[in-house]
Amino acid sequence: MSRYDEMSELLDELEPDINKFYNKGNKAAGTRARKTLQAMKKKAQDIRMEIQEWKNTGKVDEI
Image 1 (cartoon, rainbow, N blue to C red):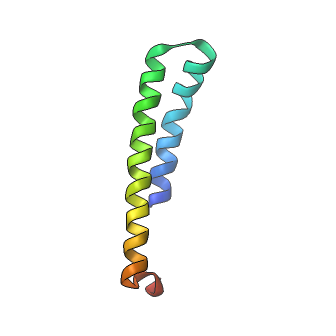
Image 2 (image 1 turned 180 degrees about the vertical axis):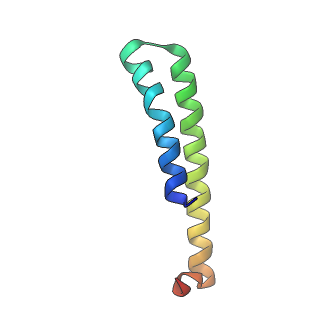
């Protein structure tokens, strides 16, 4: 699975909970949304580190 697909999957997971929280006031959905957002933040940081590593090692030139 590509990094983009991983982020897209998390975003798809987030959408229903965001809607339930903001449109219906469902507090449990807010908790789930925060958990998914935290996972997205971690995944984004991992991707950023991977990109930096590839840049620094010259691996990008091989693509």
